[in-house]
Image: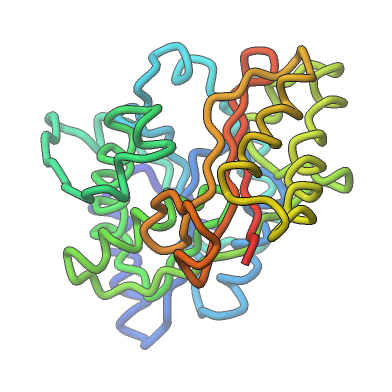
Length: 280
């Protein structure tokens, strides 16, 4: 595996691969890798000649400076995992390399960026869009792979690619879960032993919720989910939403959309966890 910290050098290396008609699969990450990331990479390796991964903790997508400071950084472990999976190139830039000067680009994603995560984390998705555009411009992948746990982020990236007419295919990949159902996330590393034992309650609640469809209306189902978390002192709800799976707007009747999912964000201790499940 070739590790590169510099844009110009990586572009030169990948240009050579492209000149041999090799396809490039790309998995951008912020590090603190787990088996969920590795599933994205396995799929990318299977569908492309070359696998490129990046590790970059993007400062401009954190609206909470404390969250940025606490984000886990485990480069040596990550590097070994990437070696083991057979990654060909790892891009590991500094913030100065990605942002030699401030990037004040503003992307208007409309209502898609104003609900759920967008409402709770102002500026977050603009920061995501800026860095993903930069990474796509650097790597020029044929396909890029993103997990459905961050469902709204995936929708934003798909919208970005459409908006800029970028020549990359965005591949959604299913949520990867621990044996007990907890959605894999780098943030799980920050959970105490006790909190980690409590965390599977999130997915258990989502699974129980969809058994109530269509007996409950969307509003009643949201109220039921909220009640489950209110009964657990260790959890604090950030949001619960039932929304369509294209524009991610709240639905009020099950007939409002052909695809509908339940989305939740909760705090467990001080760690913010998100998850979602398809209803129809």
